[in-house]
Amino acid sequence: MSTPAPGASREHDVVVFGATGFVGRLTAAYLAEHAPSGTRIALAGRSRSKLQTVRSELPAAAADWPLVEADSFDTEALNALARSTKVVLTTVGPYARYGLPLVAACAEAGTHYADLTGETLFMRRSIDASDAVAQASGARIVHTCGFDSIPSDLGVLALHEAVAEAGAGELTETTLVVVGVGGGVSGGTIDSLRGQLDEGKDDKAVRRLAADPYALSPDRSADPKGRDERDPVGVSRDPETGAFLAPFVMGLVNTRVVRRSNALTGYAYGRGLRYRELMRGGSGPLGAVKAASIVAGLAGLVGGMSFGPTRKVLDRVLPAPGDGPSEEQREKGFFRIDVTTRTSTGRRFRCRIAAKGDPGYKATAVMLGEAGLCLAHDGDRLPDVAGVLTPATAMGGVLTDRLRAAGHSYDVSEL
Image (tube, rainbow, N blue to C red; front, side):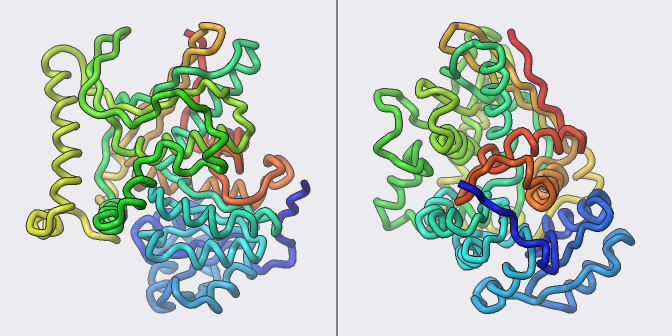
């Protein structure tokens, strides 16, 4: 199948939708500093006056960027926006509330799309509504192009490629461990959690879908059977390092994205892939206490957000949508991740992933910005696919190379 890129006659290469929001501004600033000369970028949002203010505060390269007024619920404006550009980057969430009309517009127009969602229910609906349309138009609709779920998805892809090159079989037991992380919690992420909890409160089908390890798979009946892929709960201990581990909160989304990537590639990673995500608490008694604290904190957050009186208290102290850390705090942030696998031939490989900058803000702006540039400029090197995709299946190693050039590391070695 041939999937031609949107025509060169389009007015823009990349449109940042939601440019007046916190992460939208950061993404626009990244593009102003790092987009190749001649890249045609526009800023979009509901308010022209706010867009003008944002543009005036960006680096000089953005001084003449066009401004596009569009509301998330204005179908006509979204259709016009999608037809005007090769790529739309959207930071407007929660996506379950605001995102589906834009996905539909891009799928219909053959316009590539990337977002920062971590919402499983939204992605499932996007797949059901727009996958076939996007395949027909040649659009690549790519969800989770930030800290959710690029490190996970590209890390497992890098392991697969290294294992295949070494002739070492297929991936089997594969585990991502967040070794170190520093940064704040996004107000948008908290708002997405609120929405998903509310939606599942009185709907058992929604709760079952959210808990399904294969919720994003293209054909549930074709998924490998007989494996325990339930999300980890409680504290565990790494038998090799002795470190105590807790479930990684983003694993609830990232694991499903990685499984979708495997399925979309015809199970190229291996039908024996078993994937989970954890967070390192440390070794010894202090490590055990830290891991237990992570588990208790996650349970407390979900429980507190699910109960009206405690939610009101949490709403007063948790960051609101559009809020974010200071520039100094964003600069001090970082993340370090190890993804290890045991192959079907018994060999072991590790991908070490690291980046400077707050994961949910500075590092995410780099990931989304580079994803947009990749979709806009690298079409002739990307996988020949279209539809509702994942970062690994839509852009593959081309995006990994871009991120490496931007200062992120993806280092694979055999253990």
